[in-house]
View (tube, rainbow, N blue to C red):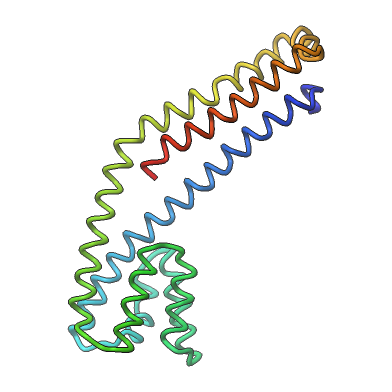
Length: 211
């Protein structure tokens, strides 16, 4: 507002920036989930090896905290600490799932809890889960690669009108300010802003398939 002296322009730019910031944060969260996904595959593979060696699930969680990097190592360490404080395995697993915030962690935790209650061939179950996770991760990677160019193109196209308008304010400040101070200018700015925001939202929806 200090630069443009136009409340409508400032609000529209602010809304567009908010959309892009939220999209950036969502992108960071997706990267975290992808890393968790790949780490869980390795963790499950290690778990099956240790189970065959006679280890228990509780001891595996306690020993695995130092084998991985963040973010999984932090969550494993929290489980290990809770088990040291005599929390039940189910309680520790529930909190592990909440901290990971991923479908893969939920699947692993559900399988471990069910096996803990009714028994069964846990090693075979974990092998199947790991295979399923590998397939899903490969599929996600392929879809992401295919949609990467369209997402970049969508971002450039959607932000281009904002850049043009900002440049006009910088280099033709008086003319632009005078125009957008009139009734028709305000109406055009409002309509253009609404269309821009709608375009950004639609573009994000279309290109979000790879996320």
